[in-house]
Image (tube, rainbow, N blue to C red):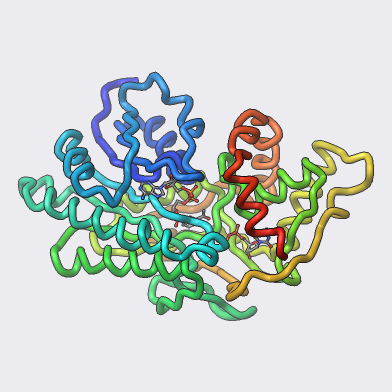
Length: 357
Ligand code: NAD
Ligand code: TYD
């Protein structure tokens, strides 16, 4: 590959979405600096294909470490920063909200402060072309009833979980750094992602792996809650599109127009597995088990991504059922990755979250 023309600093780049973004930007010829704390969900195996790539630099560290950030900015002079680093799981936020305040709120604020101090010393042209893109979620908008219009960029924030409250707070600080100091920030709010390399605490990989282990498939409440699903590659393409074309200070919703009830998603996985890995004792759906609901469980998320489609020409490439099949196949094909992430930490999480349900 030719020498990179652009450098991007990707925080949280060893996680599910961040690693997909890193791989896609390397394929596009950019130099990528990856900063990741390698929490339980950060996994260097996600970046294994870049092991000997001199244009992909991995740095083990925390977005809340101001000295480290200052050194990285000075050394690598990035053209853009994409901030994926976060605690990302709602159920964990219910059991330990403080971790979410530390990384999602305080960490993002420290990152912003360090970036601002560096950016203010750049020459005018580099100040104008630099971008700080903060990756956020549709969950900041709260919950919808059936028939409510989908969330748009002007929907008021109404977060209901400690996770979404911490992401909402970080979004507000990003906005404030643009309005107050002129830092060229962008915010994207995306719906539920799925695809290869997702840590199996989230619904889709959890159900795939439980099914393969013939364990119960835990569906919270009645399974009627609705999420809008987007393939992770479509999310990463949308982020690159926003980074390239959006006006500083703007926000874009990203979604897949693929609303499904949780029960539809779980049955969909069972259906694919029935075909790809038939189970002699009957269909996988017989493992579905309704369990105690999540407290404060948002009923429905739906995203109106028409601003992004209209202004910047992005549309998702994956259709949900096709993407779900590809995802199931990836977990079947990557037994070593699966085995490594099912560590002691993962087993203790299953115990903490599911034993009392
Ligand atoms: P993930 O948990 O798989 O990855 C998070 C990564 O951040 C991990 O590699 C972790 O080690 C790293 N990290 C955590 N704390 C850090 C810190 N203090 N400093 C540096 N690195 C740290 O999560 P994901 O699903 O890839 O989500 C990435 C981002 O996208 C998050 O900001 C999340 O809020 C957002 N998002 C996720 C979804 C989704 O469906 N997964 C949807 C919309 C938005
Ligand atoms: P999850 O993947 O945790 O994402 P989020 O909470 O960010 O939407 O959950 C997706 C949906 O699936 C959500 O409505 C909660 C539900 N769910 C279950 O029914 N069972 C489970 O074991 C998990 C993890 C989630």
